[in-house]
Image: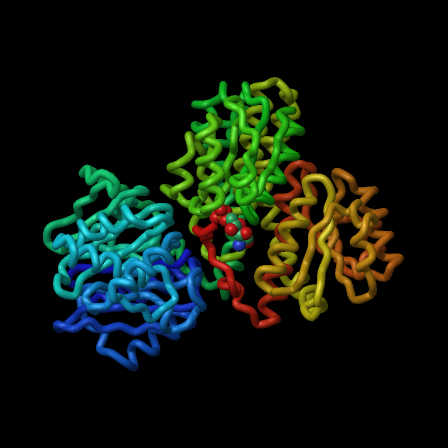
Length: 615
Ligand code: M6R
C-alpha cells in the first residue's frame, strides 16, 4: 500500500508532490514525508499523521524550493507509524533518497549483512535497508545509480514500487516496480512519478505504466530508459493516453468522496452497461466474454476470487450465475484460496473481481489459477491496473475513480457486470427463455432510475442514523442474494464508524446469533417483496418478540413490515436477482451518516487503505 509521488523538471517540485500525495492518501495515511533537492541542498520533512500535518511542519521548517522531489504517504508494514519510520529514507552517506511502496521480505537477513559491514539504521523499516543496499552496490561495484538499483533488486525478495535519486546527480530519478503499481507521467522536459495517475492528471495525459520486473531511469533532458531488472534487456515502453479528468477526482460539492460516490451510482451503472446492454436488440455485448465464449460455455465450474466488498459482489454473482446459467459457482476469499492448494481444473473459469486491480491476494490467486491452466477473467475498475493486465480477458466496470476507502459504486457496478455476464451466458446456453432474458435486460436498464429514487430517502436515513449512532453492535439480515448485501452493509458500518456489526442470512439467527438480541440491539433487515419475503417477515417477528429494534428496508407500499418494524426505509421494487443493486443504497447511506455523526474520518478510516497491495 502507501502512495508515492515524484517530480523532476523545471517547475517547483514541492507543490506538485505535496498535492499529489493528498490525492494518494487513499492508499495510506498514517505518516508522510517529502525530500526536495534545491539550491545545492537536500531538504526534507517527515512526520506521523496526514499529508496536511506534514505540509504544515515542512513549510515551517524548510524552504521547499527545488525542481526534484520525492514524497510518500504511508500505510505502515515494518515499524509503527512515527516520524523516523516515515519515508523518504536516506542511505548512510546521506546521498541517496528513496521512497518505497511494498514489502522487502528478506530485509532482516540483508540488514544483518549490512550491519556486519558497518551500516547503521535509524528506523525499523525494510526501506532503509534497501537504500543502503543500493549504496553498498554503488560503492562496491562502482556502477551508476540505475545499474545499482537493478543489481540490488535482483537480491531482494518481495514487492515494491520505488523511486530513488542521488543528491550528487539531481537530474535523474530511478524507479522500479514488482507487484506494486508505478506510473510515469510524461510532460515537456518534465516527468511525474506516482502510484497512479491522479497526482499529475492536470499536467499530462501521457503515461507509462511500468510493468512488473522493470526498472527505468528518468532523466530531465534525456528522457526515459526502461530495462528488465532480471536480464537487463531494453524495453520499449508503451505510452498510453489517459481519459481521466480532474473533476472525477475531486469532491464536486459533496462533504466526502464516499457520499459523492454513493450518489454517483446511477451514472456509474449507466456507464457500466453503456454499449453492453442493448435491450431493444435483445443483446448483451461484452468483447471479453464474446471472444472467449467457448471457454465460458464449456466451463464445468466458475470460481470467483476476490476480497472485501468485491468478494461480496462475487457472492451476489453466485446466486445470479447459478440461477440463470446452471453453471456451479464457488466464491473464494483470494487470501484463503492462494494458500490452500485448491482444486483447479483446466476447464474451470476463474473470475477475479477487484476495484483497484492491485489487491495482492487477488493477484496471487490469479497467478495460481493461471499456473494450473484455468482461464482467468478480470472484473476491475482501474484501467491498466495489474490485475487487468494479468488476466486472460476481462471487463472494466467504468465506475470512474473510487477514492473513499469504503467501496460503494465499485460494488454496484461489479454486480452490474456480473449480471450482464450471467445473462449473456444464460442466453448462449439456452438456460433462459427469450422473454425472461428480455425482461432482465429491461429491468437492468431501469436500475439507475430506481437507485435515484432510493437516494431520495437520504434525509430519512439520516434520522435513523441519529437514533442508532451510539449503538455498540448491529446485526444485518438478508436472504438469498440479499444475504451478501447484509454482509456488505455490516462491513460498511464496521469500517467507517468502528461499530461492531455482523451480517447473517436471516434464517441463521435461530442457530445462535438470536441470543444477542435485546432492546439495545439494532437489526437492519432487508425485507423487500420478492424472494423470501414471508420467511423474512417471520424472522422479523422472532427478533421483535425478543425486543430487538428493527430497521427494515422495504418496498414502497408494504404495510405488513411497516407495522412490525421500528423504522422503515423504502426502496423501489425490482426483480429479486437485481434487488441487491437497489437494496444496498440505504445501507451505504446509513453507515455514512452514522460515521459522520460520530465524527469519524469517513474517507480515510483508521488502519485501512484503499489498495491492499500487501498480503
Ligand atoms: O480493490 P479491491 O476491490 O480488490 O479491494 C478489495 C478490498 O480491499 C475492498 O473491497 C475493501 O474491503 C473495502 N475497504 C471495502 O469497503
